[in-house]
Length: 332
Image (cartoon, rainbow, N blue to C red):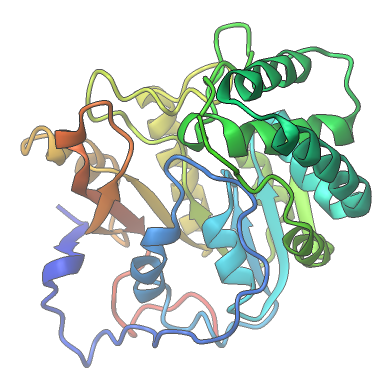
């Protein structure tokens, strides 16, 4: 096999060949505005360790995240490195509408969120809060709301629904139940304003992830956080848009990464590790068995499961199109 497969928590790499980037202490001002099942905040230290060695010295660096979600890695990356331009994309039109609203109309969005938050906080019992939640969910699923109101409802539902999930039914209607939080923070005005400023240099797309390549510069770094491959029959949290991201889609994405490699663009991808359930399942090991690719297994905590005994540490995979060696370098 051509790929390299190693474990983050038990590394044995020649230090002369690979030196992890030092931890950054630069202040992160803007942070994700959503609670998000599967958010990548906990993976950032591992991702940072496996970035290309020359990432800090690349000129005119473009950061591309084709599956933006809550954007934990995006917010960290563009506030840590010298990024000239960023491109974010998602197939979820409602999610992208929130990013667009924060970018273009932050004060109007804040005003709506403050109003919703005041109404919600004024409710005195859980039944009243649940009824308010369900009414707002029905409004969100209608087609009559404006873009900014839709964005405000999206954030409200995210902060008050069960575990920050985003799930839709076959009619593409948001159907996550009420979350029973006592006093969730619905409006974070300072963060919204900070994000809005950050997004001014960001191209925001809503479509298929392959369209991001049209905007990528020569020195580009792609981070892929696609809907994860389910590792059990009950793992269905990736149904956050109409349609599905099945094995055929995972294979299409792998083909797209080969195109990026051919164009000498860096990429790193995270996904679930089927070996958690079946040690003999080599789905990703075989799919990304290419000369330049490296597969790394890292520890991550699974916090969402109806069975508490199944929560805890599991492996996830990081896959990248560069060896952990200074001898291979696309640019500079």
